[in-house]
Length: 378
Image (cartoon, rainbow, N blue to C red; front, side):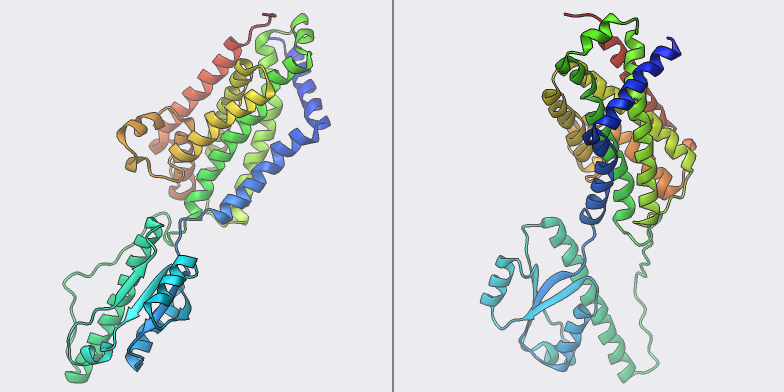
């Protein structure tokens, strides 16, 4: 390989990118837009659940119970209703996600020391949110009941002490506040870079064929490997710039902590980018047309990276056959690496297997891109 011929192809591709504002916009603006949209819109946190209340008791105790919900950041009281028809209409229209019904004898049963049942109705069309909402309500009801018992014991005995049989004190490591953005943003960087990298390079070779300039390149002394690597280099530089922007946005815009090595993060990103860009070149070589190449790139990169990489859905919860498929998706290893570096602050002593497999992916894709390109007319 001769450096001057490699640089000539890279310079040609750089000029093409600069002269085509659409390509440059796709390379820089789209990752930022996607990170902003997904970073703010995509969240697994459940808060401010809209709720309506039917207080049939209307006593001081029932109002205190309701205040436990209105005073919590997890619930948003939308209205006080007076019948089941209003509840049904609120849930059907989407105005409320849950409804709390307090019975008429709420205060009497509590004052007499008997258990009182309150009804909770949730919208089961979103099963995940419904399950979390039920857990929230259970917690509020438990804390309220416990406070009532403590007050009754203090009023009767004064010196009596409540001892719970199990004192559960939960604690979350690596993401103490359990904020979903802390796990979403690192994984989002992997998905965006996979899609953008493959989309950018999937059009390069196909564009040369469609514009009739491939014949001119074939007639030059430039070797196939020099042509491929020359086309990869400009997009690799742009891709690493995109990674820098994404890391800075995660740090200063979303306040996602970077606990691990920034050098290791960029090294793994470089390997992943090389593989993703080479995958785009392979798609471009096979497709021969820009339309087909872009469509193949979306199917091959976006859907598997988004759905099967562990970015949104836990791989352990997938069927066994689907779990086997995730081993062939490079974004799976990059997502694991990013989350480990970002949240856990670990290095290659823990993530060595993912790093090796990601490196293998990069090497294989670069080789396939060079072998797959034939410098001749068919």
